[in-house]
Amino acid sequence: MKIGLGSDHAGYEYKELIKSWLAERGHEVVDFGTHSNQPVDYPACIRPVALAVAAQEVERAVILGGSGNGEAIVANRVPGVRCAVCWDPASALLARQHNDANMISLGQRMMTGDEALAIVQTWLEAQFEGGRHWRRIQAIDTP
Image (cartoon, rainbow, N blue to C red; front, side, top):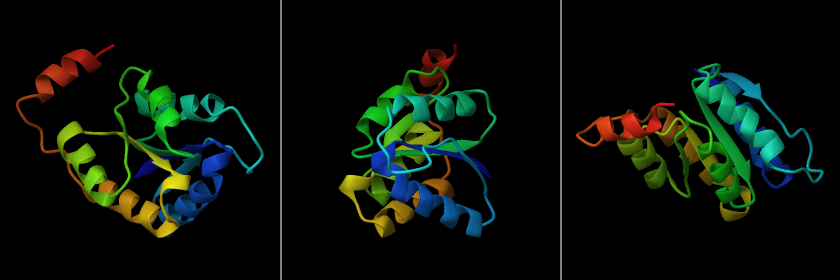
C-alpha cells in the first residue's frame, strides 16, 4: 500500500518510527515532512498529505502532532478526506470499519510509540463495512 505521512515537530519522532515500521512491512511511504523536531507551522506539513489522499496519489495517510487534533482539523478541510483522531486500537478499528477513514491523526504526547504502532496496524488491517449511512456520507463528501 502507498501511505503518506506528515507531522509537525511535536509528532516528528513517531512519524519516523511509523515510517520505518511501514517500510519493514513492504509499504511504500511518501514522507511529506517535517524532517526534524525544529518548530514548524503544522498546516504546512499536513495539508499536502491530505491533498495527496484526496487526489488518490496515496491510498491512505497517517498524520501526527502533539495531540493530533489540529492536524485532523486541517486534513478534514480537504474534500474527499475522512481523517479520524485515534487514541487506541479500538478507535482506529471503528474509524475504518464504520467511517471508512482514509487518514488517521495521532498525538505523540498522548501515547507511547508501541501504542501508536498498534493503532496504525489495526487501522491498516481493518476493512470498511459499509452500511446504510454510507450513501449520505458519500453525498456530503463529494466535491
